[in-house]
Amino acid sequence: MYYIGIDTGTNTGLAIWDNRQERFLAVSCLKIHQAMKEVERMAARAAEEGTRICVRVEDARLRDWFGKPMTREEERAKLQGVGSVKRDCSIWEDYLTDLGVDFQMVHPKNIATKMKADPFKYITKWTERTNEHGRDAAMLVFGL
Image (cartoon, rainbow, N blue to C red; front, side, top):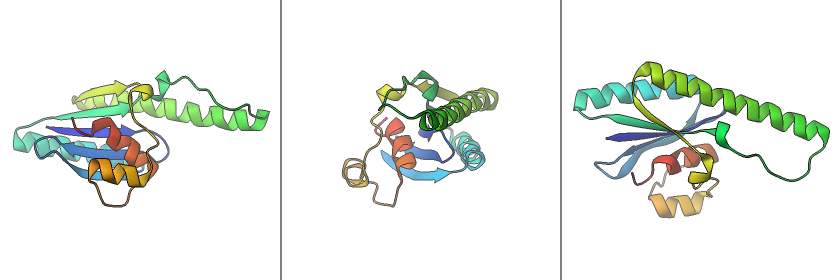
């Protein structure tokens, strides 16, 4: 089975974990439409191979937003970003429902996010270059 992790946002993190080989096939950062094409490609590949996919999406709609006190301008900018990511979660949920694949919307508190590159390499054995979004997506599916 292939597990696909999605970290929503302007920069969409995408990771593909093959649980038969117990390794990542990809850890990357794409535009949302490119990530959706990759999910479709993997769904077709899985069907050809007689296996399945399960997509796990970090659901920012479930996050409680806490942080340092902000100015009114900082707060306004933060809220716009939060709204955008929440909208992306709804888009992913609708898209995956229409595509007819197994998926899970995962609460952010249940994911080891914001991992730095060196610990990520050590834990996952993925040695290629990554960014925060790809690593967050990877932690949604690592070891499943």
